[in-house]
Length: 210
Image 1: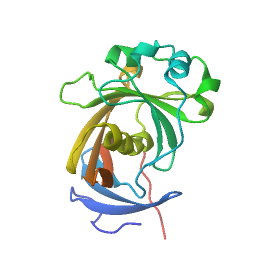
Image 2: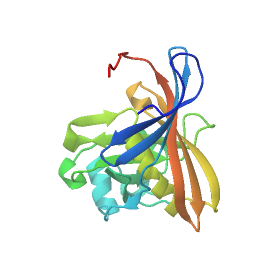
Image 3: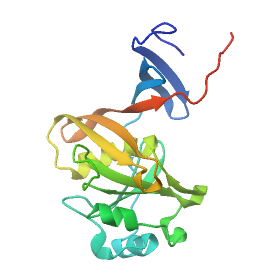
Image 4: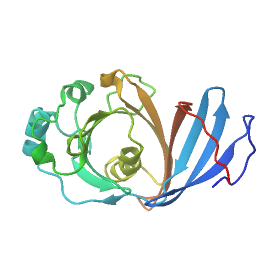
């Protein structure tokens, strides 16, 4: 449902997308050939069970147990509507080497492998997303996982209350680099609000007639 703005031009406008998780407020700033969109999370992330232990995750991803974990980050499972297993690894090289080798050990959730070592020093997180149970070998940009990552950052990132922003780079190993911007507000150590966004390009156009 279009809330504001008018057709054409480059003025910011608001949309509400009706999704299974609930209404998703989207702010869109058009530009030639695309634009920028930011989505307010309709539901803040919650823990979604217990992930396999490090040895199992390492074997399932073709990594060594010593690759897993950095800083205060340990594997965890979170959902902001879709569940993912989040696997922190010590280096971008470990992200590059990750492969889903034993899909049964990964269960029915997507696996998000990430590191704080990035291709661009201006970014904060380098990530890959595998969803073998859905037949998705790898996804170049995963908004649902970025939304759930709010819970990971809040729990393990050592962040103070207030506003924080992250840039997540994904899809680099596929030759399809993408950037997802994540903004979050922490209150008493927990997420109070969050949004994700990024640049977009026009791939198809259409008209809806009432």
